[in-house]
Length: 137
Image (cartoon, one colour):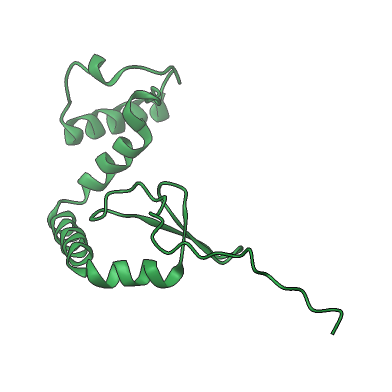
């Protein structure tokens, strides 16, 4: 009986507000699979049950995001194959942090400095003629 510890100074505060400052209707969570934690965008650790409950209550927003992505996929599939090249160029451009390089001199240049476009079929025929002439000489 001498090893019993009494805790008569312990109190439970049930009405204390949460520290999460995020918008109640637009929360975003991050799942840390190593530490097995769910974190809110504001940095507060969230109870996994509360995060799942929030997602279950606000499923309509998730459905709208899913529908939007599905519609975007449909639009991209309808586009012509050369659009894929321009999408890759746009991704590598990264809002001005990257510049294209000239295929001949390897020097970078600004997209705004492109003055015109040339007919691809005409250009390929011209290059083929030049290659034939250099092969005959």
